[in-house]
Image (cartoon, rainbow, N blue to C red; front, side):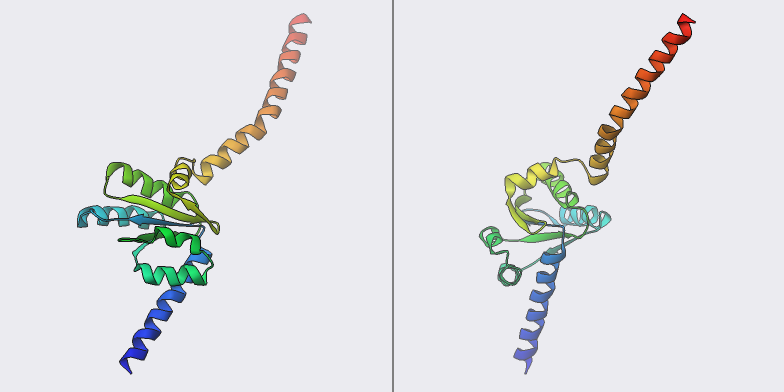
Length: 167
């Protein structure tokens, strides 16, 4: 009877991870081997403050979840100690935080990620981490959209000033 309970608990864990893989905007997989308790605590704190769930999972559980979520391309990075960060909203935040932490702590290694349902490798995760935040990108877009109107207004003002000087 206890065996059935254990199997049921494991299946519920797989279902939970599968749902998180499907629902997350970004899921980043890392190798945390070599980090001490203080470093892991600091990393968890930074991720928690950004609203990102960070957990250590067994690779067999993750493989079953990736199979259920149809993300089996991720299986090739599921070797050794594996921790995974799930972000429901911000696609850039987990990559940015983990990449910055990895730069300061050589022990943390980025393995890969799932971004909007697409599996990407370590180099693409690093490139994603270099992108500005969503707010920064929206600010840049707004600036680009305002530029023609601003230039037109300056040109009209210059013509008006010239007319005023001539009069």
